[in-house]
Length: 447
Image (cartoon, rainbow, N blue to C red):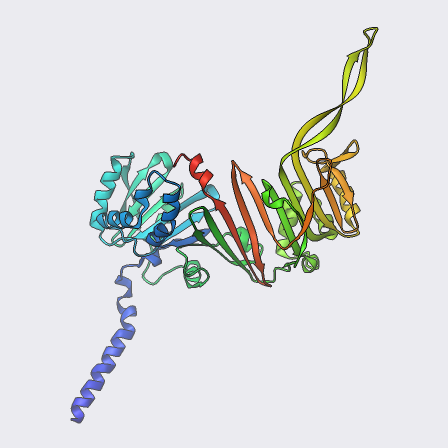
């Protein structure tokens, strides 16, 4: 009996040792997983394709998109199974800021079926077949040269890329080792922000790192009318910016074609001129000759701007006429004209006049008769109060109201984009980008 017990203990111990050391003994021969192949990039992400298709189906049908039947989860799943792709697992995305290069990797369930899909695709677009050699291994590639698109695949993955640096990125993908997932992807996949969303993008962009942004995560959300991109930023040091509880805003700003509405507490930021965010904003200002330091000294964190619509104003002009003796004389006249509505309110302290003078020295602000012009703006009236500078076109100052909003609205080719700052903590910022899709679909002739 004792011998049997001893034998069982020895076998259990042997099995435990085998399982413990198995990765070390056999790891080098194991096929790299899809996540091990993911390359470094400025932007990385994951997409749950079927769930994303389900989420956007209402939008596609609401706007009567011609090809909406080809974007249903059922159609996509059937097609991918036919050609050996497993889109029930996440698809991984990556992109590079330079030259807008991007690609994706999708898991393969049966690589023998992919060839059939490529042959069918070749009947629609001009695909050429070739190969390149890496570490003594020849790898087949499929090209669509017109658009600089490339595709290659292996036993468990398919890699697509659009851009000039295909081979460089492909070598990263092919040279992967089992359990060799790269550190940026580890951090991204561990992050729990927006974990339930079906399209999530993370950033490793140097421009964000240079201003202390440790984590930048973006997630898709949509309904039948709009596309929304939620944003989360986390800094290694404080933002030194908080949201004010209330501030002055124009009453009609929500209907403006272009608008900015900010109510921020920047008192801490002013105390940290060596902060990387402060320095970056200063550098951006220098590009346009904007006196950023003077502005920060004078500004109290409130700004309201709107542009759009037409206003009737009376304009004075000089016209040459002939008198009774047919001599040319100059006559001052007035006429009614329509100009674009333009209003700007800046919260200012006692250094406001010095900032105004610096703008005039730089040529950003200039006098024109009894009014002012900001660069190429229409003629503006100017009102100065103790805590505000107000510029406006038209004959009457626009009505104002108290507001808690912090947002930017910009209309491009008829589509109104809205970015809002939803909350600011000491180290974190939440925001969102709202994009109506109707005019985008119309402009691209999809409906």
